[in-house]
Image (cartoon, helix red, strand yellow):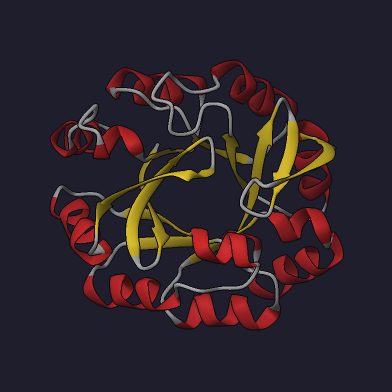
Length: 240
């Protein structure tokens, strides 16, 4: 299972939110490159980079941060937030993203996203499935849809998607444990590779996500608040 630390960006700085609420913003480091380098120093190979300004503005904003991290590390970066147009997507890949996550646009314009999957290949496009009470939310989690999480994933599975990142918004940033039952249901009812995101509170949760069959786990606030050490994650990677 892939260990995927998260760096969320607002105003070029490394921040975390609680339940996607921008008013809860906490700055952890003003230099995201420094954070990414530290991850790499502990044997981590993957990074989930989110442009929160982009998610709110509905277009890519922090591509410079992406470019700087890509140039300064060898991390495999998946990038999301504000990717609404072919130009945004091209910019993300040109700035060093190895994969991109399509969230809001996957709800608002499925035809466009299916075209992007066909154009770039399913291995480069991740379906962002962010939900609250099983309903998909968009635009930096500010807008709710009527789409059920399972139906949403299955629709994209039929159209070639291979990987999804699922975030239960009610768990995100709360350090109270992940949405294990929901992830088990997704793994049982769909065939996509599932990357669990949100609520990881300690290393025991990481092992739990591995045990239920997730292909990756995104870890954010637990790292920044010292609930999981980078040494623990390095040990997990080496033992795996």
